[in-house]
Image (cartoon, rainbow, N blue to C red; front, side, top):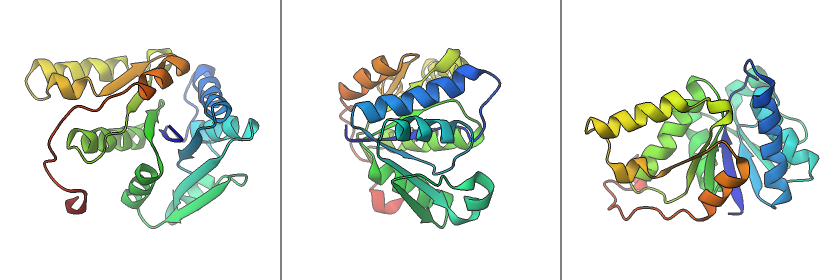
Length: 193
């Protein structure tokens, strides 16, 4: 993996561990010579993960819609900042630039980004590993919900197993490196989305 997209909150949350782990993730990616792709802002966990990577002289590419440039405040020290028109264009660009995705704690936007990436993988539009860094068990309820989807017949176990989960950065990266996408036929082509 040469490049990982990180989706996360533009807030810090209530516990210091979220900021600390976001910063550490950025540092870890840089030390392993993995380029960070993220949302381009210098606020919240977004800023922390970028600062962690930059602190270790890592390459950091931000992708930010024009209309969020003032609200999320574009990071000034990035290797590259790519400005796009829409949120969908942002996700598409972030997907195009990466070899895998990590999700940190966040709100609606983070969940929307995560679910779009895992849905694209389920449809066979990409074969990239998608990991949840489950800091302080933040995503436990979501993980239970996904299992309920399987138990109630709305999701296949093979698609549940596509989701890589760990509370440890190193363990999650190991899982991502060893990930093998399921052999799923493409239901639709990328051009149709």
